[in-house]
Structure formats: C-alpha cells, structure tokens
Length: 359
Ligand code: GDP
Image 1: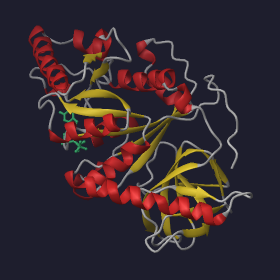
Image 2 (image 1 turned 180 degrees about the vertical axis):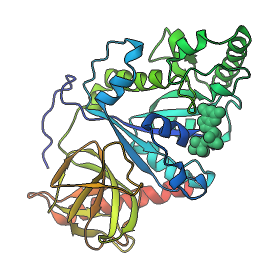
Image 3 (image 1 turned 90 degrees about the vertical axis):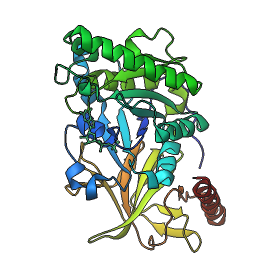
Image 4 (image 1 turned 180 degrees about the horizontal axis):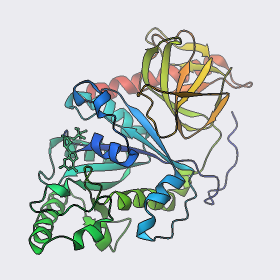
C-alpha cells in the first residue's frame, strides 16, 4: 500500500480518538453519559464497564454544545471518537490497549479524593505513550453548598456559588495541582492557564448536573487539531486495532475495531492475529452504531459498503473465533504479499503479550 502524500496543512484531518481514564468511581462512565446525553450505565452488569465501547461525536454537536462560551471554534476535524474505558481495576490490560490508540485523553479526578492509585497508573500510561490529556476535576457538585447550574460553563457556574464554596473549591484545586506537581506535572485550571501546551489544563466538571461540560467539549474540539495537525492528517494507509472479539446473533463471531486511518470495504481481504496463527478472511459486513449510540448498546446498526477512519466499527467475517483483541487488523492490497502481511499481523501478538505481562 502506497501512502498517499499528504501535506500536514490542517486540511483533510481525521477525527481525533479520545479515551477517558482515571481511578474507579471518579465518574468516567457518568461523564461519558453526560457528554452523550444518554444513560448506558443501566445496561451494564453491576455498573462495571467490561468492554471498550466508543462514541462518535460529530463536530456540529461539540460546537452546538459549547456555543455559550462564545469561542470562535473553527473545527476542521469531522468529529471526535471517544473510547470508553472500563473503570474496574482488573481491566488494566484493556485500559492500556485503549490508551495506546488515543490521540488525546480525559483524565478524570474526583475533586473530593484527589489523585488515587489508578489516576497515577493512568498518568504513567499517558506519559509512556506521549498522549496529551485534559484533567476533568469531577464532582464539583459535591462541594458543600454547591448551587446547581445545569450544563453551565464552569466560570458562570462558579459566579453563582457562595464565597465559602468558592474558597473550598480553590483549596481543593490547590491540593490537586500540588499532587500533580509531586508527579512531576504542571497543571492549572484552564481559564487561568497562561502556558497552554506546557501546563496541563484542568476543567472542573459535574457529570451529574453538567457544569463545565461545555468547557470540556470545547477544549477537546479546539485544542486537538491545533496541537496535532500532523498526527491527525488523514492517511489512506489502513491503521486499525481490534478491541474486542464477540458473537453477535445472526453474524457469528464479530470483531469490534477502531479504524484510525484508511478505508475498509466489504469484500476486503484482511488478516488479523489469531491464537493459532494469522487469520485470513474477507469482510462480510461493516456495521456502525447509530450516531450518538454506543457499539455495545443494543439498537439500530447501520450497514456500510465502506468506512473511512476514524471510526469504531463492527466487522463480521468468517473464522474470527480465535482473533486476539489488542492486535492490528491488516488489509491485503492488490500489490501486497500475503505472507508478509501475515507476519506483520503475528508480530502484534508479542506486543500484546508483553503488555499483558507488565500490567
Ligand atoms: P467510573 O467507575 O469512573 O466509571 O465511575 P461512575 O461513572 O460509575 O461513577 C461512580 C459514582 O459516582 C456513581 O454513583 C455516579 O453516579 C457518581 N458520580 C459520577 N460523577 C459524578 C458527579 O459529577 N457528581 C456526583 N455527585 N456524583 C457523580
């Protein structure tokens, strides 16, 4: 496959892929629900997210919802693909798999608890992979005496608070920035941040009443293309990772993948890494969830003839039973040597295994 020559000129950008990380119970699921405007928590076993799902936010949606901030958002990315990461401790492997794909991340910290063990673990993963992130300082509504301002920008909401609440907020904010400093990171609440790019932005949020959510969406949308034009310049070379392997009634074993770059077509010959060697198969069906719905929520799916990255997709094909999550998916092009592609696919096995060993 020849890489289409693309100038990194800010045109033709793909959607950034974002993941939500942080300690258990900081509100990752709730935050995703809140920015999605739906509730998937009830559809989960025991409230624990055991799978990686993804939600795609079209750019207009982000723009509409941060309109109140009156920022001049000229979004050149088509949207934002948010990967949900499980909040349970035993899913470190899934978390590291998710974070490897991400262009940007939201690190959720509970304002009442500050940095916790998994916050630090997430932080280390992000640093290891050089992934930029925003800190969502969540649960501000838990500050004693908080006056709810549903879905308001955070500065507006803050003005509605008593002096006591504002003082308490500042005290806790200082605590958290100090804890980050102890981890070697400079952080600052975003509206006071004079060193964007150097100092990490903190956005105070409530995933329950929505304060600060417009700010978070705006920062995600605005900041990612600015700092990552090169990384986000769309390339036609397929870059695709298998997130999950599972059965779907009527389709047999399917794989959920994140297509970062390139186009997949029905009928493409693909190779994925399998437990018993490379799996060579042909894409039979390409499915995406309905816009604004998550892959793992049952509901209407859209069938596609082809799909362009970045998108999360379900693929139905034969012989996928032994596919290994966390590995790459390769398309065999007309000029490719199948044996070489098979080798590349199997190389991923080692990286997945070594990653699992470490975690
Ligand atoms: P996760 O483990 O990080 O995914 O956390 P969840 O999203 O499951 O949230 C854990 C608990 O905190 C749930 O009971 C949520 O309702 C609650 N929660 C999450 N975000 C907020 C928030 O902003 N404010 C308040 N008061 N509770 C929250």
